Image (cartoon, rainbow, N blue to C red; front, side, top):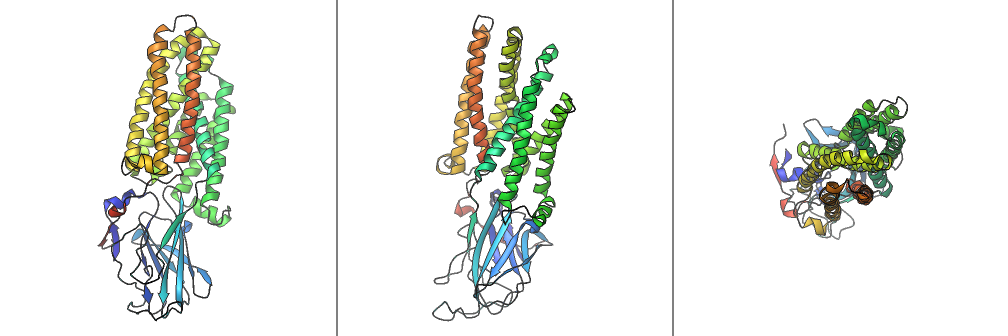
Length: 442
């Protein structure tokens, strides 16, 4: 028998422990042959750990494998000889690339820590009956003075968040400028080659730094050991991150060494597209969230790249700036609409209720990002309906350039918020929705 989650469980962001054998706070007659953990999402055994600490304080790291019939299940074998109160400490990597861990206890035979011997009603290798879940962790039995199962997550990595936000933002900006420059016809000679190369270089270096910081963050030891790297490269999320970094490096090669701008543009677009398949979208409704994130990133690249393209052209050729301002404004309008629609879809997927915008850290960051986007829309409307109609008038081009620079400053803040959103957990589901139903595994 195994557990088949109802659809609500699929909306959990991080891997959540649904059930264990032995169960939390259960009593066994003899040591179990294996420890079986059932999670809310697929987990990779090579990136997981289960350690059992017995009553003497000795610990043993179990040999981990997936259940051949259910990728949501981890099975730890080679438990060894146990007695008394035992603690199971587990650690897994969620589908969004965030490490999650927890622990629970069970008792074998007579626990000397209790005043009276507890009743032994559970056969070998099985757990006592589990009541309905009342929290995301394993539900404890009604045993006096017995600690419940608990789970924990690492704090948000500041440097990894900054590297991701600034790096991806710089990379997207360089690709956006390249897009407008290559599509500018005879004005493509105005492409700021040094600026584009610098932005892509900074973006690539920071994405590489982010990858290293992320690996250290998810590593059980905090170090990049050979065994961990081998396991990571054998996982889907590890390969996606590796390919993303490789595409960024190839983009830098194409623009800086090969000096082939079209190839650099396509490689950069591929890198941005793949960036939509990591983080939260990989864990929550990926068939909807990943395309929405891809549209969000590509539209942001067009928007931010268009702003810097205008600032550059205004410095080089005022007549060309008037022409490009109209073109950029039209494209930016489409990009803004795409950003809002894709952002709303992601918000609907990642938040449970609108109130999460005010009472949860992730929701408050989303709210700050929404406020920033609304301010940017105000700048865009001012530019489009106030400055552009009078762009031929003396001094209007300079006012447009100043307005665009202010817009760029706000976009930078929005991008930094996006970097932290990738690491802050989304709001947990209400406890009332965390229900499980029994079912037979295939």
